[in-house]
Image 1 (cartoon, rainbow, N blue to C red):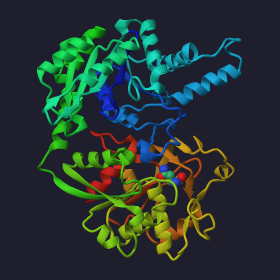
Image 2: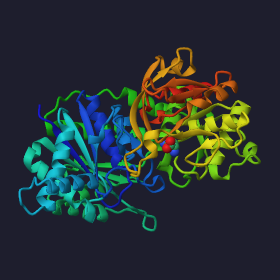
Image 3: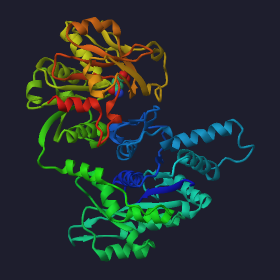
Image 4: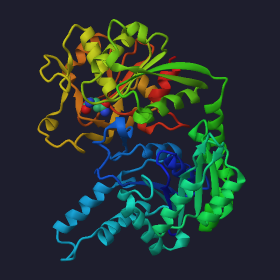
Length: 527
Ligand code: GLN
């Protein structure tokens, strides 16, 4: 079977769930037994998401091969329960750089290099490459159709359809229907215009997903169908729901899976979505006991900054029949004076990853407090570094620090590896992606993972200096996981505590809603 392609575009405005829709469609096809891949094409000019400010763009999601990507890849991995690679994240900057490099290498043989066909060809190659070997390949184009920036990607998918044939591609357009309180009406005009923009670009949608916060009357749906030339049954209302994990089942009952299966000539077998329904039941359960977890955060005004961490905490709770109540604590405002009152009532503390000195002292305060009061603690990357600094300070090394925050510290518990010291380029130069880690047999971490040999994803520059190991051990904090090749510390834990465990890697990226990462599970089980 040749690969079938589904293109997901958006209209009216961004941020209405195009990524969740694409991921949910993938889940429906996977549930039908097809091998699915998924890719995000982002129109902005960055080369990858590594240098983007998380306060603006949300978290940087890291794949196993070390790609620094848009957070939508996190949704994809969680919904599809697969591991993606760099080929699933294509940003304009990456395409343009390749075209310019090809031009410098003389590959265009004297031709004028243009957006069409050279850039659009490179985009199509990136799509074909990512789709190779899969039954279905889903491609989400970031932004909204009509944005100046996304024009080349839209033209590329139009040409792609032309090359592989309409029967092998399907276009899903996600639009938003605003609600006017004054007249109590859902309005379809912006959505109609958004479809017109797509058709002007030469793409006729096969499915229209109409996102809204209200019920859409039949008349509005028929009108949308008429004016966008999409069959009425393929105009799918998708109201905002309590949990994103309801979306696969919702789309299935609205007939999306069936329409796609018919379009591609797939089998008519109904998919088994029992696992999704079970997850939905857990997520929405009102009977679960609440667990109060404090997230010691630096970015407080963007929900998406710690998306994977939050999903991992919640997933661990659901699997233990509990409900997470996550309290964001402003790291910058945390001091030894106010820590007892600010962390009052918390049953567990999570210190996530981060860069730069802002808020670091507050995170060290939180780790110290958790250690001394035996409050379950999970540290993620920077969260491990501050845990080590906290314990070194408890041991009497009062100016213990990371050279990231105090380059002149007399006790660089955390420092740079030699090969990082001479770097002058920021983008893509960290320790990224999967590295192996060997866990001590008797450690809590090994028990939780059920094995001593693991691989997890990394995104950091600084490392624990092994010369401080003895000092930490004397305080009860042990290195129980190491990289087998370099001896670098990967996991630390304090066996005498209820749960005090931290990893240099980011366990949140491999956590799944139905299969939480063991370190998060351990935290919730200890409460
Ligand atoms: N800033 C730290 C480092 O570069 C931690 C990075 C992180 O938490 N992702 O090592």
